[in-house]
Length: 142
Image 1 (cartoon, rainbow, N blue to C red):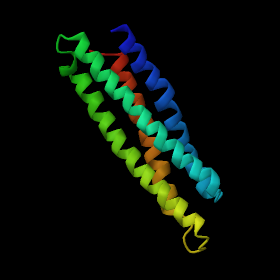
Image 2: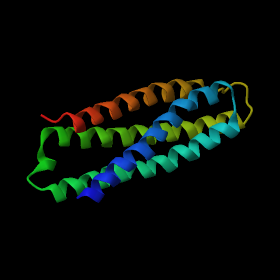
Image 3: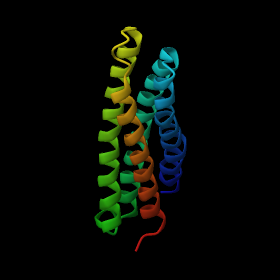
Image 4: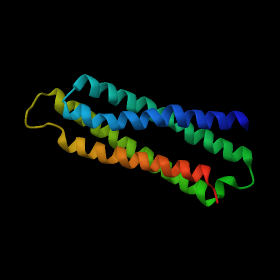
């Protein structure tokens, strides 16, 4: 049980933290039209998004090992639901990053990826709030 807890917390720190930071850095790269940096942000987002699934996997495994219906508690259900919503938002960010890279790499002055820029900025802010709510639900169960 102790190892699962460490893995759950480790993945949360080392996957979700960088994932949040890199998605919040994307709008600046779009504004400055820095395509190489934006490509790196896109790859990094994808890698850390896959890594963040470890948080959910080890969290569920920890809940199963703890027994006693822990996974059925309202705050656990809310946390897992928010996590799934966050994954969907990350998929949307990844799609917008791909579109922005394509638009900026084509060097067509008509498409400056501003729509993707705004959407990525808004969704990455929402994503950070979701992570904070999940953290609150994990630390302060009632």
